[in-house]
Length: 320
Image 1 (cartoon, helix red, strand yellow):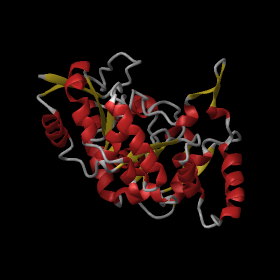
Image 2 (image 1 turned 135 degrees about the vertical axis):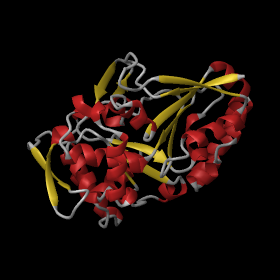
Image 3 (image 1 turned 90 degrees about the vertical axis):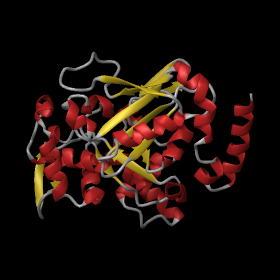
Image 4 (image 1 turned 90 degrees about the horizontal axis):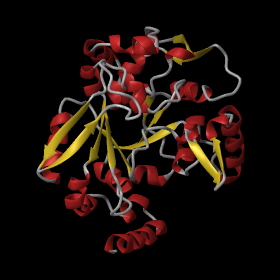
């Protein structure tokens, strides 16, 4: 029997005694794998998926190094989001996109591969598998997230001004009680997301207004307590976002990968929010084509002419 590694730590770090340990799950086949993933997420309120062909560590593009030329790299995070978003908004006026909010624009920018502080997620596992398996040589990674628990954690941390160094003090009870007071994922309003976008500006004030998550009104939260990403649904500014059942997390003051931020949590808290799965080579050798057969087709995912061309190209790649 082959193994799937359930990896809930940043592999650049040593295992933490506070959480983020590795676990090996032995699976007979992909059917066994999906059953065990269902068991692991049985108590979750919602399940979002993210698929990548290698371990991208859940880091938004704006924080990654970008290849400008073979001999040159740059960091996108030098970009001033407070300038870029209004500039794009002004130019989109010529395409009858004046009704888009700032958050709609950043979601559209992410969808069109522009560097943002968003991470792509989907409610559809087959869509995640498609993006995780572009070729038979891929090393697919699948991430699983309960967005309601993530938002409850963010609300508890922000409202109680919990520093990053004390994140391991947060308990399951803290997250569960906060989640009961929140209105599902809709807690991620435009106001909150826009606040997180403002964190990317070069000229930052000490404090930003953030909507109080447990009562009406506003609460000023120092930016150092806005390090937990927020999960939210987009306004579907592009038809593909609907086809792909898109959803997003938006990074705040921390420029670390999502897995690194959450690895400081206690293990029982982490288990109710997030984990990733990667596959051993032996498992992939036996199952990669079967795994690919579980994904949605490019025509379903793209919904236009590009899907036809991509499906034809995929057929050639997987026939080699």
